[in-house]
Each structure stands twice: as structure tokens, then as C-alpha cells.
Length: 408
Image (cartoon, rainbow, N blue to C red; front, side, top):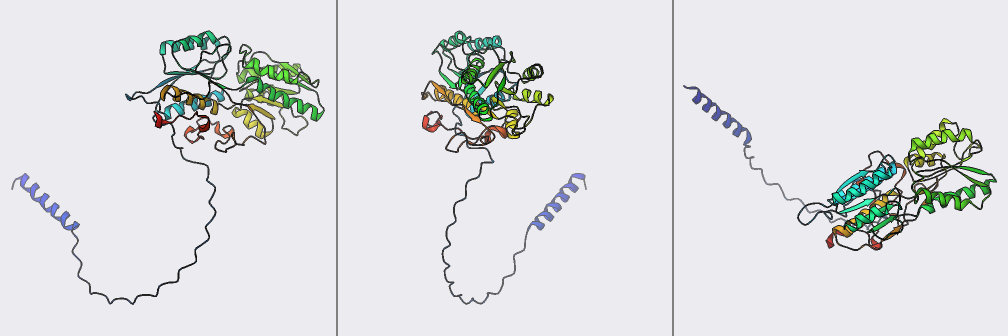
């Protein structure tokens, strides 16, 4: 018998065995059982009292996507937006960039981010690059709202919708929208806290003001003006200005390490914004870092709710932060572009100033808004790799900022 025939017979036998194993013989018929006596119906139970509804817990899974598909064009291509950032070494700006990326990408769009690295001339070059790149829209966090005006006007005249965030353009109306806050109000918040502390504790304060970028007239200048003007009539408060620290925590640390030993009268700190980590480390090295309540505590006020300052508030080293959140500022800026560029809708107003809010140890975890929809976004939310899909959705529905895909 040849080899092929043997293989064929073997295969037939194997298949037969498999089929036999898969076949279940029919069960033998069973004898019918006697019918059972019907049972008496049970007495219905009394209805139970309804329980109170439980309070919804915070979401632990990604939230619904309210902007899905908004940034996809009818031909299936995506809208591309340019994001020019003043610098990315600051965790506040990392949060801003992440917030915009999440919203635009959730809408199906694309973000091209450019980091100016705190260099005013580099930012000017990037603004000019927008004329070549021709994005569908531009969001920019200016380093200065005065010197950049002519370049921003050129972009506007080229038909590129521009939204400035935090720093407003001064002396022109050639922009699509401005979303931010009043820098002077941040300085005033800090100055008023220092006034109250000096008067309440009957102490003279010699405040070392750790400056950001002296060339940034609108933001550094505005914040410093608010601080100086709000304390000018209080003889108990003296302001001592530092040099230029370029918003860099390392430069701020060096400034404090150099200045406090040579100026022993300094007994309070004002930090201009985003450099709190450097100032705190300098105080630690100088053995002058003590929590509130300790007789050696240095009153410490700051601007911008960076992770370092939020942690220091919890630990009692920083007394108050005059905050403006990149979460709401960059969310509304992204919504403005989605509304206008993608949906063809008007926005409620061209200029939106979001009030700053002072944060203390007692208010660190209070909601940003009275409706309770948006819990505080600082502190634990400033992680190295935050999951933006679990962040609260800022709707602003009543003000008309929320993009509505159904009208596309």
C-alpha cells in the first residue's frame, strides 16, 4: 500500500474518532412526574421606604467628549492650530500646553507648539513664522504686549485668527480674541495681604520682590506696579526689587541666595510668578524656611499656582498665592478657535478678563466656580504626566463659549 493511501485511511479514522467524541447520545425518556399541589399565594410585603439618593462620586474614568469631531473638516482633513508659548520650563506653562493639546486633539484637530524659551526676539521670529505656516488659527502667550504689537497686527492682517492668552496686546484692536487677567490685580492681591499682615502683627516688613522679566512691561511691570501702588501708603511695608530673573527658578534661587545675606533687614518675600521652587530652595539653604506660626517664619506671597508653591502652601511656608489658572484661560482660548474657525460662530466677547483669586492654606482645594462643577485644578493636578481626560470640563454654557458640534 502506498504512502498516500496510508495517510488517507489514517485521516478518515481520526476524523471518525473526533466526530464520535463530539456526538452526545440522546437521553433515555424519563417517567412523567406527579403534578405538584399548588402552593398558597404569599401575602404581599409592605413597600419599603425609598432610600435617599447617594451623592455622585468624582469621575474616575475619562469624561465624555463634548467637542468630538468639531475640528474635522468636511473633506476629512483636520484643522491645524499654532500655539506659541513664552517658555516651557515653567510647570504652569506645561499645564497650559497640555490643556490646549487635549482639547484640540479631542476635537479631532492638531496643534503645532513653538517654545520661545523666554526670548523676546525668538518669539518675534516665531510670530513671523506664522505668516509662512498659515495655520487655521493662532493661540499665543506673549512675553510682552507692547513690543509685539506690529508683528501681531501683521498676522491679523494676513487673515489668521489670533487669540492672546494671559498677556493682552496694548494699543491695537487687531486680534480675534484676548483671554486673560489683569496683571495689576495680582500685585494688588499680594500687596493687600502684606499690608494686613504688617498691621495685624505690628511689624515692619522689608519685602524682597523676586522679579520675572523686567523687559515684560505689561506682565512683570503690571504685577510690580500693583504691589508697589497697593503698599505705597503703608509706612510699615517697604519693597526692595531684585534684578532680572527671566522667570527662571534657578536664577530666582541665586538672586535670593545673594541678596538676603547682604540685606539682613529683608524679612518678607514677594515672588513674581512660577519661580517659587527656586525661592523656597534658597530659603532652605539659608536656614530661613519656617512654617507659619513659627517665630522665624518669613511672610511669603507669590503669583501663579505652580506645584512648588501649592506644596509650600500646604506645608505653611507660602502664605498666599494670587492665582490665575492656565486651565480656564487655555480652555476658553481653545473654545474660541473651535467656535469661530471650525463652527463659524461668533464668540460672546472679544476681551475676557478672568478675575485672579487669592489662594491660602484654607482655600487651596475650594472649587473655582460656585456651581461646584470645576474643583480646584492646582496641587495634585499638576503632575508630570496628568491625565487631561479626567480633568473637569469647563462648559461656560451660559456665556456661549462652549462649542456645540450639532450646529456644525
